[in-house]
Image (tube, rainbow, N blue to C red):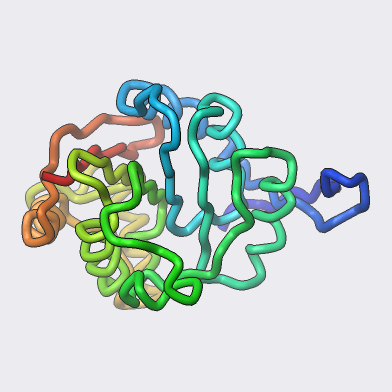
Length: 222
């Protein structure tokens, strides 16, 4: 796991809230990912961006300042991370407080049923699929298929296998190390995700090679 750096965070009222978590990898990849988002995010008003598995909250905070027309909805399954996400969210008027979401459950069970079908413009998920059971990937695509508006985007980021092959060797070793930690983890094959997406009315439209042997994949609700 990455080294974690702590820095103080404050509410808009000036009262000390909690400490932000800072993951060096998230700092390194936030700008490359942003450059991809800028090609797909529209400039219209009243758009909703749901981040699934927000981690520390660094990504949503970085993106929010570039897209003031969008309301960002961070979420996380791990309760201990919600405090860090809140610390980042408190600094932006267009980021809602984070929700605890279990992506394996249908969205109608989230936040007392506050989510509505076909109400989300963008769903973003980084570095979750390979460090979670495959059921989480299934839940991501199933919920995206129902939550996204027509022509809405699902944007995923991380390391992937391609047609049964993992490259380079560093990703092969990473995949092995993940499976040693938990046999249900590991790099997901894009061809399998494409089949899963199509079952839920979602089409793969672009794969962007990123630094550190990662990829940003753009999926679109048909």
